[in-house]
Length: 246
Image (cartoon, rainbow, N blue to C red; front, side):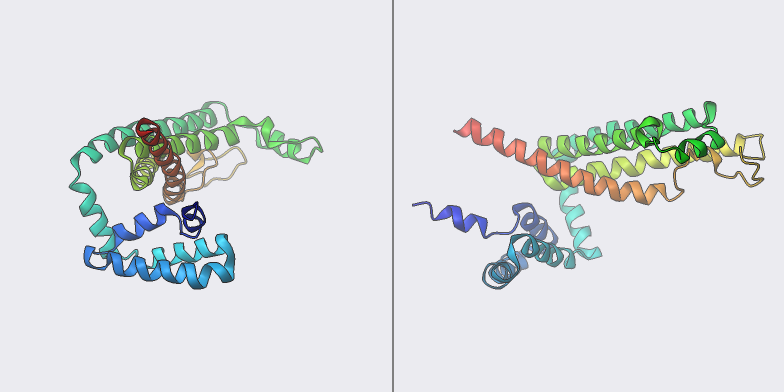
């Protein structure tokens, strides 16, 4: 009988259960996960449906993410030298690529700036489209692809979604910090005191129209995209192992 199929559909996402177990001390893992699973199956899922029930489960997982539990998770991961040996290479490459993309955008804005009057007139036209200005959207697409790919590769190499999240999060933060430092240096070395519109306070005009809160913004983006890539990487690894055992 296929009784296992319907039962499997009633369970929360496996990766969320793994994250929860990693956040909990070993003595509480079975008790807490068992209680949450029971409430999920018997109460939440019948009344809310799969999507809302999964969101409820994720909120419960997030409630256990205290500073102590995160420290416990990091301490556990640092003991696995093989995992981190594979992780730092992915993080280094992705961080350098993120910095390279952002610096390329910076150089374009520095040496080939967009005429603000021309851009204003272009936006006033009926046929205006952001796709006609690839320098505005291509860097974002490139950075997203790098972080997603880094998360995927890290999870595929290690078999852990959390490794994909960590790799992309660290890479995005490191790459962005490198970019911000060089952008600040470009502003310090700039001899011009006015921007193209005549504003005398051109303090951050070489940031290429990127918000100054770039570091936390890209760090959060790295965590999200790294987790998404990690899920795909973990799934690919699991499928490969299943085929080899089949």
